[in-house]
Image: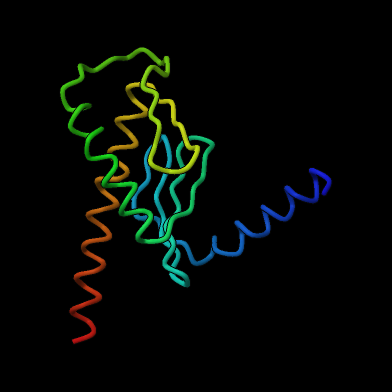
Length: 128
């Protein structure tokens, strides 16, 4: 398949859910959004976008607990070099972060988890 055709196909697929995506949290490094029609979660970090089911996202977030604990002891570093290399629990996904990028990623996950929890609680209340 020619590259242009493949890029158009990917763009079309990504745009299909853009109108139903609700941004849970965003910052200078990316965003986390939830699709209202299929409940998938989309994580954008810099120029990387990854879509998760709710269970996959929960596993990814759980994986980040150890990183959060380690990172909380790090001193603020203004150096833009990506010295934090993380081999994730996702097949073949390795992420490289500067101090600020990792801090922003942790912020995205933390605030999005709060929004998901609130959404879950309010949905449960509305069903009663």
